[in-house]
Length: 224
Image 1 (spheres, rainbow, N blue to C red):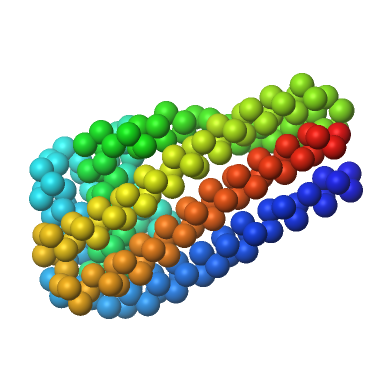
Image 2: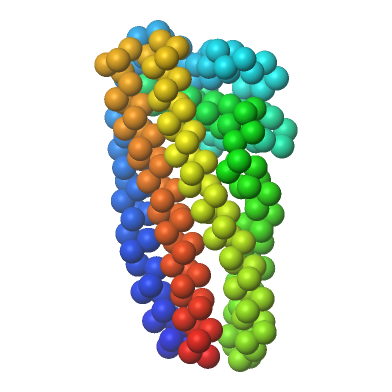
């Protein structure tokens, strides 16, 4: 089992980047959550405003539970914002709300990578299954079981690779929207960029983790 535990070092770069990204998110969100937007809109109001500006009238904005649990669900066409975003008028809340609105606009416009990510979501949800299969194969020296586990995990890797451009594009749309609609002033836009750049880094870290984990599995498979 020495090689099993020793192989975790492969993941170290992704772990370091992930910790750094989380620190950046906490710092940026904490910093700009204390600064109110000049238009005094809450995150929920900003999302509704941007959806209307984009001509989207069939996406409700609801409150979710949990810190930064904000998301847009393309299956039920609902935009959900965490309490810290939904009901506050900070620049951080506006940035997060605009980002999730970007996802709704992606869906409405048929953005290809969002469709691919949605299609791959079931594979990503089988994360425990790939691990179980691979561990059984590793312990009992079964190349077939290990290969099946690797194939299942490859679906997770693809999901993460499709997620990255979806998230980056949503942030790009968010910045463009708050500028073009006049939702924020030119002096306020950099704050949104800082929050969304930090958030994007977490997705980069997650994608790197998935790639390195796949490399680790292939290494363990070759050494068994």
